[in-house]
Image (cartoon, rainbow, N blue to C red; front, side, top):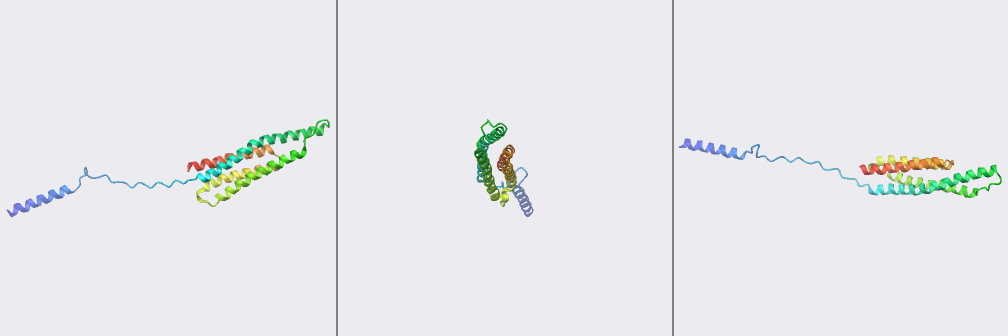
Length: 176
């Protein structure tokens, strides 16, 4: 009887152990740790400042084309007046004022953009945008030099390049 008891206990112990050991069909799938998503950087305040600069440049360029044409027309009329005394000469003081106003306005655009560039210079999360907006500032400085030299068409093209670079800056903010 002792023999049957030991044998019965051994079989029962084996069955209990076998029942408690999970089989492959009963194992729960292991959960893998999902990586924590990187925090999304909110660049809306900086993007708004770039958009404001684009608006300023666009408003100026709308008026710039008209003023540039009037300056060129006045210069052509002045040349005709020198060649033919019967042709009425345009007002040189008004033409000079228009030229000075254009240079001063471009200077204002350059100053506003330079302020924005300087505020981004030390910010590590805006380094890509800083480089892009720096290129826009360079184009604006070039436009100011060209307008000062009387090359108004080239200055207008440089301002358009500056707007394109500002737009590139805005797009780079959207992609990050």
